Image 1 (tube, rainbow, N blue to C red):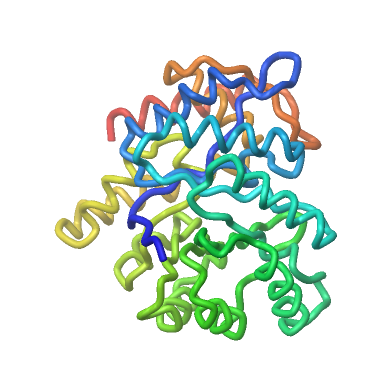
Image 2: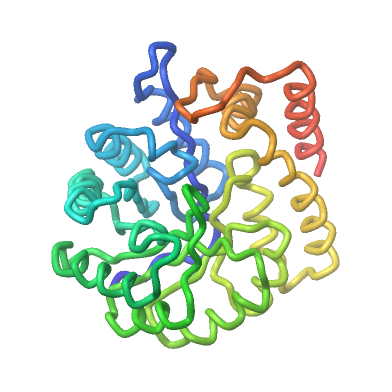
Length: 299
């Protein structure tokens, strides 16, 4: 089983052209930006990538471009969005063909909101039979269209298969993460927290890193927190406070505001998005992003 590095794994946004196609050149520039900022791995074709509104061909294309651009930096991908198991298999195989280093499944795709862990596990067994056995797997507790957390029972099953290496955790609760870390101890599974407010607490108890939205704004500051959380506790606390307050902006017209932030940082891309309900940024929203970029430079 391949072991992935601890650290910072941005959830990548997808640049689109003005006519709403994947902007391949902008995607290459964006990939290089994350790497220059110090990321340890890249999570392509995730919710931030607008994967629910991408075709299988586009998911494969994005994975291929990111993987070819990233060099030695590992690239994982999901694209796991359909309701039917057969369609899910096709989606995951598409990103496999694109060269992903791990296939990441979405936890709410394996059972309906009112269905049990047993249903989840039985559906997962079907997927495991159909997916290549030579590639590591992972799970993402994606909040859309509903959030389904990986329970201790499911996590014990994942551990027993010896095929899982990555868990993007969105429970936003340090004690629940502590329980998960205890379960996966000694296994190949690593847990990456998606929540900023609990990040420092969870790094201290053994979480393996961060994989969240705000790495689209300042990957380098998350990397710094990861580097100093143990050796410089006072500085880490100050940085954690800045990151937590900054993270509130992810609730304001995301991913459009992240694309605007990338523009301000010199990465040429449009603000085009496929996210339903997305809108043009207001004057005040643009000012908020400008002020965040200015402040993070000083930090």
